Length: 233
Image (cartoon, rainbow, N blue to C red; front, top):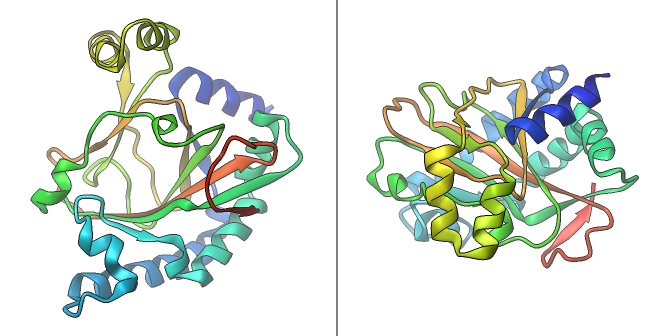
């Protein structure tokens, strides 16, 4: 019954929030490692190659997943053994899940950093990512509220029609004028999931706290369109 509700939620609202608090101990340990790694990246004065993604594109505030293999391994186990995998199996009607290493990132979003205010364009992930996927955002701090979060728009068939008939610019104008959006708050111990076709943007205005999280991209096992480094979950 819960799975049906979650599927209804993601189809209606564009996102669903799932409870993974049974793994709070593992999340806490991973969060400490991620926060420490970001602090090393911020303090890096030698332009260390492993921090290149973070230092060369400060507006993104990103570190690659493989920079912390122990966290990658821990999160894989959390996903596999939680409601997240159950939901994805049912949503896609598949018996196999994959995850993308290339499109999974640790994020550090400081609302007081002017560079990071630039990375807030409205978009949907299928613009750069082929095939079906779910972005599982796992916060190690709060997500939304006083922390930078996401503005997420409801799915709209009309927006898709406008995009296909005219162009992306017209679709966005209609979306922002007529489609409902929300900015959910996600606490540690929960995760927010949304699919590749959902419009969203980073929310940074009137925020006071730095957000640290992991974006963990999962895929159905039969996604042959996806072009990138992927592994079985």
